[in-house]
Image (cartoon, rainbow, N blue to C red; front, top):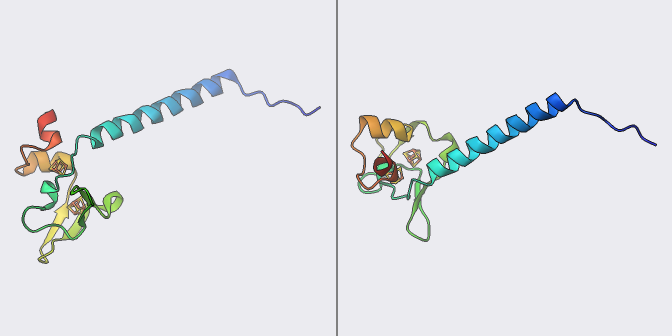
Length: 105
Ligand code: SF4
Ligand code: SF4
């Protein structure tokens, strides 16, 4: 008969806490992301859009490089700019008053 592996209960408890914490973080991130209704305004959809801005079949915008978006980018007309987190858009620029993050504040 194979020996059963017995994990110390304290170790299991720490693992459970960490998994619960990670899950809570993921849920919080999804809730935060859901505030964006993908109007594209903060990416220049209404004037000179970022080259990475794309529109889906339902007319909602998305970023083609979302996971690596922060940093130097170019607009369709060739202007350089820096993509910043939405909290900086809200702090330093004039945000779209209909933006979900503006309404949440
Ligand atoms: S302005 Fe707000 S709602 Fe519109 S795309 Fe940007 S973050 Fe999303
Ligand atoms: S790189 Fe930044 S500005 Fe460009 S589409 Fe993505 S999120 Fe918008």
